[in-house]
Length: 263
Length: 266
Image (tube, rainbow over all chains, first blue to last red):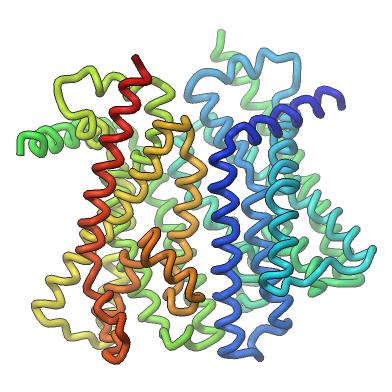
């Protein structure tokens, strides 16, 4: 745990070093909040009946999903691809620390940086600017927090698997674009799943991606509540465990291969 | 002209180098097709739900996206690696360019090609021709000429914006995140007609970071959606001018950055 914390702290500091980049990111977050707000507001004004939720819920959904995408997606796969390309992966493997664990710690540090410095303050300001929905009562908030932790686990392990894939085969850039667009589509990050046509919604329900943004954000806006919300979190836990196992298995296989190649 | 000749010679080498990796090529093509299909699906989900988006029908939205994509495809074919300038600097590859007896800018530009741009190009051409037929368009020669200019302007606008952001790394050492976020803004503009956004946003994508000139304004002109009553309808013709201004601006920043880099490097 101590090692974990120190790696997380290191990643936090790494993110904090680049001030200019931080200000750029902040600027864009506000710009995106603003534009996402207008897209849904325009659509809502045009046909208020087509949503199934209130304008406030819809705008909150869209902005929260956008913000989580920026904060949770810290891209361990890019780090891995880069380490392999430059050969620096050697030094990572020589550390007396499990690589999977190391990547998890790094990502947690970066996510905490993003959440604390970027997401929470921006969301609070967005609350005044765009009439966002405030957090619900204690139990809803608690469930949202738990759900958020598992959505991070799911996203992290999918990214980690992509990172492993780039280690054995390909240039990451080529698969990255397909991967990100599939995630943003099936996770309901841009258009919430309840607006999908039936066939697509059924597909997205059997994929793990909805556990990333759709479930936590739907819980936040209380479109998922009661038993349905608990079931949804259960589904997240299921995917987090399954993906962690697959990632672990894939990593062990690749690790042996890397070691053999190394001599 | 000498520089241009050198550029194309080097590009040929870059293409040959790229052709070494077949699997990579295939993965890239599939990736890009998946990405574009997802985008068009999102557009059609939205439009089928709401029938039109602020007066834009399904095929008008497809036209808007594919016009953006066509300009973007040329950018991604020839200039994709500009965003990687940061890595060139960190790894010292850029220093090699400075040592050679040719313009470092040409050496840098001709270094790589990303020929998955071909998939974008195909997708955009297909989408535009379907939209052309479904919207019953009958363009005159002048409109075709303007269409060609608008595509080239789109390429130049995206290229110069990415170049200017990449130049940040001459000062700060990093620019990757900043250019990723430019992508995100670009994504908003490529999906939606900017008239659904508020005034400030339209002002930003028109005046400050003029990505709206890649597709929105020329689309208004090409689809006959310009409002003759509006005092701003002339913006529909401005894409080539905007592109020219950006080229001049980017070239200035590049030279400034280069002078600073050389002096810092000792």
